[in-house]
View 1 (cartoon, rainbow, N blue to C red):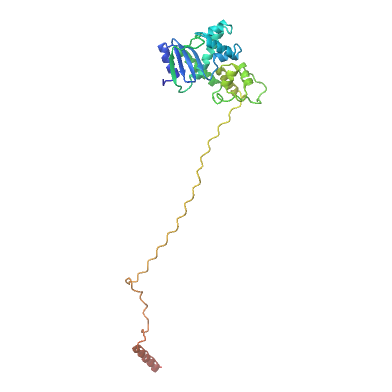
View 2 (cartoon, rainbow, N blue to C red):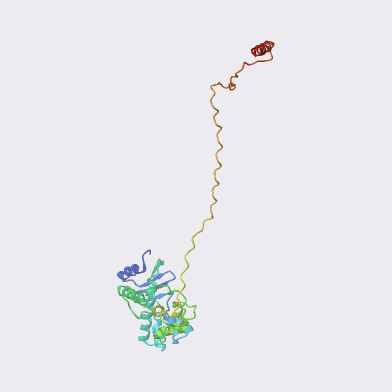
Length: 289
């Protein structure tokens, strides 16, 4: 079944089913002709645990009665004087309401219905499915009014060592919770130990938190930002090699050297004709003097 527990129960109630709706290992809902007659939840005290915690019967006595019960173990307990018929009904009522509140709020349990299965205690109370779901919503609202935070619901109960006022007024349930608190047990574990319903214990825990009588858990530290490794600075680009400057155009073609400045005096070489010319020039200058 892929539906929620509430939707599946509504469908089974409409069919008038009798049997057990198992929600994995979390718990079981027992129905009789379309009405809920018993609910068990792994996180809440069962009828057997409530009876043993109260001292009415030992765990061995419960085990023996359960093994010998054919169809109605509750009647066997009543005949043995363990409790009265009214006490049995109230015990079943409290355990069923307690288990329903926590079981119906679970998300995604694997549901499986077994037709004809019955609880070993028998049938001693009936709940219409719509009324049971309405009661669960009423209890949720009551819990939120006491303290609108679930931060302590599954944490160990840790009383404060010093109170901030001279007088504190506690209910009987709050007093039992404070006495049983050992800084390690959660509200559900305390409920099983002292024989209280898990819901009543949780309400007391939230009321104690609202009165600043419990140590609240430290807020979880914010995740540290991931530090990226420092990036290496990109090396500065080497200056581009300067291009060779274009040679000034001289009007010469490639392969020709630059023009030499023209001399004022006539150029001479080692040729004998040039030597004779120089001698004649010298003689002429001397004649003018």
